[in-house]
Image (cartoon, rainbow, N blue to C red; front, side, top):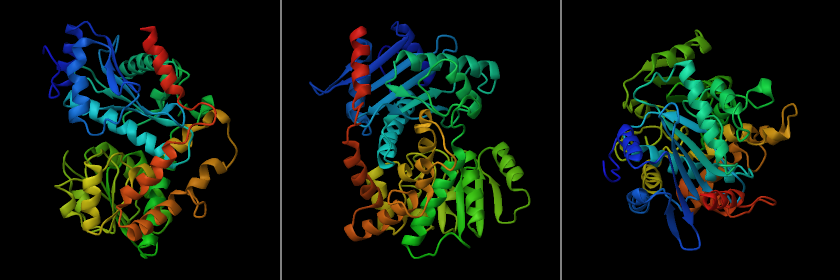
Length: 434
């Protein structure tokens, strides 16, 4: 491959980098000249691709790639917008068929973290780490994972704090321990080392609160007796289900492509008759089409699209997955036209970052800085905000996505009272060093 090809596999793209003598690459947005600067001339084609083919590219402050020195894996760190503070967001370890998919995920997820942090009133900007699962290694091998996450953490350290990482899909608590051994720029540190630990439980509770807010906005009187169809049965989905059971849900249907994940859920809920388990094939979207009051996408993003939206029967969509709308504006409008209430993912699943964002400030029992997000009174809690966004969208005619985004974009412009644009300054100094 002599020039960038968006349809190239990850292995082909890695070969392209090696052929051009590139072990690390970066793209930085030059705000003075309104242009993207690339680290290498060979990457010019990709620079043009960001502008022309990636609608989620939103003047991202910095995109950094490296080839793992020992594992040979493709690793990326994406920094979107840092008015409110350093870029913060988890590291995803996932499967990507094409380099375009890898870049698309990082670009979109980092932007989503900017929205999530701003709407939650956190003094953080938006960022994301992405690692492609390699084709030639056992991703579950403990020795491989330790090597992988050590070199990735060293990558994070080399960026001097413009990005602070955390846990995300595919990255385990043990991996966070490994990351912490090689960088200070991380959250979700294990509890035994003074960190906040796994954020999945509170994230699941937060998604349940979004469901309650939407149900109450529609006059459907809460979760009691309702049917919820869940796409995915991972950590967040399981803890969400646990909370729904406490609230008297009538029926929860858990779907997953991995039998092992369903088995873990069965072990958690035992003989609970209100929970059903269904093994599905990869790409099967049937969980979204169940006759249910609520469908909850809790797996991968982009599942709400031209193919799926016409077949959805539920009144409400509220899930824990990031970037559920394939095309945010258009598909939010399609849902509105079908009178289906969509609760924006960057509102629903905020508790992952809320739980870990400020762990450096220590802990108090039942920490009000955390648990106010889950109460039913605070004006910016998940429940109250969801309810108000649904009601306000009906008055304004805006989609729920537009209504939430309008609020978010105002907050994005508020600079951190001490460290506004710190990451942008760090990135500038990194480039000057090169």
